[in-house]
Image (cartoon, rainbow, N blue to C red; front, side, top):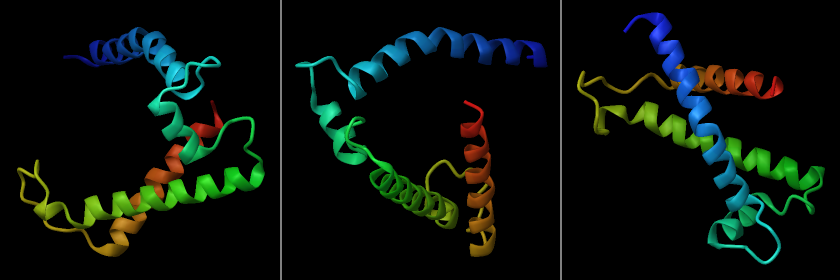
Length: 116
């Protein structure tokens, strides 16, 4: 596929999925009164209800999420020689390289979040 087709596929796929995925996320994370489900309870337990979240609760949620994502990313990169889907049989990365990779990925995610 040429570059234009790939770009059109990504943009078109995103456009096609945005409405149903957005409706599902609204249903799951912020339901109408009386329509709470198991997912709503899970989201409110993890992140707190949107009306009750002050800056302290937001800070705790942010730090816990970042700690979990750091642990998961570090584990995937450090243990990749034993994980499935490793056809090149690559070994573990050096811990400093794992940390730097997480830092770069996290910085790109933070930068993208600023422009939403």
